[in-house]
Length: 374
Image (cartoon, rainbow, N blue to C red):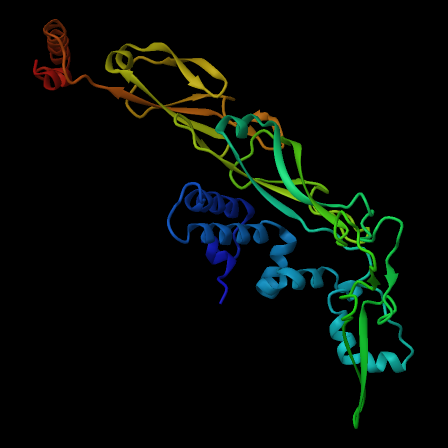
């Protein structure tokens, strides 16, 4: 039995869009095949992607909530979308009511032999940390079906044309009427001669072998928007497989996965990092150059800065997706390093400082005296 999509992502059924996105990011990082080599991780990753793909789109989520997985999978989903013109249920109605339609003078329709949209394609693309933050142009290589240039997609040899199937007269379906004591019933099935295309190709195209399509590898230049993150999906219009019988091509969907950085971490549109300073720098204060995604920036360490203090560099974070002028912040956690060994001279100076500190506080030696044995 298929698992519930909400259960897969670990969210409640009333989870909002942001909660879904956070859950997906966390699980995608955990189970991505490039990161997790455990058995079953890849299947789990695909399951997570499928769940998020359905629940992240309001229309498909509404269908899933109402009909379950059957409402968003394959022919069932297409049937629901085409319900207005009975496109997804025509075979069912014809099977049960074909005899009635025939007696009422109903006519067969050319559904299978008409234009058909090509399949959508998916490409997973890895980006480094900087590419995800600032975006830019990226060259990708894809392999998809294109309409055969030799026959123009007809599948017939140059100079010839497909002929109407004599068995079904171009309909793509055959009907068999059966009389019973309860009336006349008609069974509808795919034409066995033309396999539902409504056409017969007597001389096939030498280039495509009669399919009307050929597999082609090509390079594409796509633009990565600034601020993308793990799981961001880009749609490249009409770069999927070519349609059949003059139908439009499908689309290419590019799913982005961002490599981790050794120095920086990402929290939404904020960037996190850590900085180690000496105990003297923390006590006395200083100005220090720190690394950011924009290069080196000067950071002021105030006198008396405590360990784990978080300092903020405003507008040095991630550009907001769709509004790159607005950026998050860079949050830097301060780590204070305490030396494990000091020279004799340093120990004497620290002892004097500890004594002064002790006289001021009324405690023997104070903190520095206890720390360095003064």
